[in-house]
Image (cartoon, rainbow, N blue to C red; front, side, top):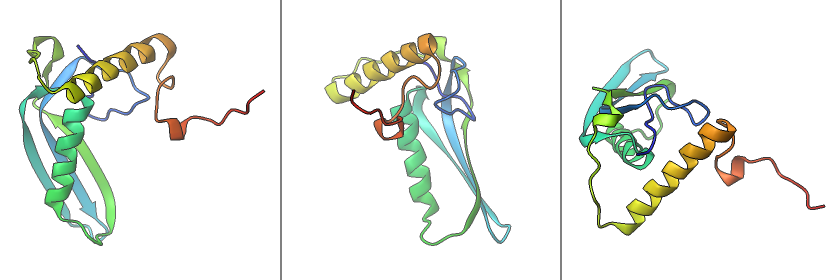
Length: 129
């Protein structure tokens, strides 16, 4: 089972063993007004791919075009113990491959530290010797 991504998660923080049933996006605009929307997941999930998809759906629902944002918060709601979440068998090979890779990255982060794995573009450049 992969590690979950709880509220306030960043790639540099360890996972806390929780899965979300919903995500809430809160936007604060420069004029002081706010917007908040919650979207429920079909089932509790701690997988980056599932959470990212719902986060993108929430951003699309906000319909932002040229808004001036002063703040943005994304939080997991209705958190449950990740150990109690059923793992569903999928016939989607691409999704299964992403989940296996996510689990491997979590193991590397636990062993070598939070900065051990990340996007290639964010890694420091090394010169060939």
